[in-house]
Image (cartoon, rainbow, N blue to C red):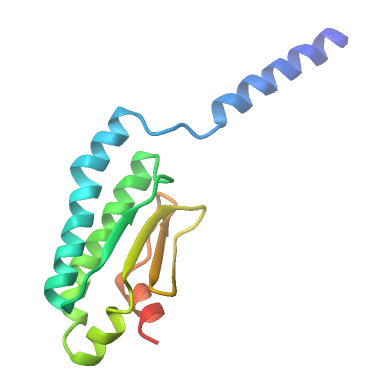
Length: 140
C-alpha cells in the first residue's frame, strides 16, 4: 500500500508538471512576428490616419499560445477595420482619442476595459472583444 502511494504521488507530480503553461516557442514567436505584430502596427497606422491621433498597440508577454496570438491579431484587425466606420465626426474622434494605449493580453476570458487612457483587450484563445464592445467602453 505504501508503494502505491509513492507511485500515485509520482504520477500526479508528473502530470502536474506537464499541465503547466509552456512558454512561447519558435512557432509562436514566428506567428507573433508574421501576424500579430504587423496587425498591431496596421491598427496604429489606421487609427492615426482616421482619428488623427496616436494609438500605441502593445502585445503583452502573456500571449503565449498559437490561439492567443491569432486572437490578438483578430483584436488588432477589429481596430483596423472598425476605426474607419467610427471616427466619422469630431465627437467620435475626441472620444476615441482618449485611448492612448491598447494593451492586448491573454486572460481566462475575453474582455475589454478602459481606464485612464489605456484600453485592455484580453483573449482566452477562443474569443475576443468586438470593436463595438471596445467603443461602448471608450465612448461614454
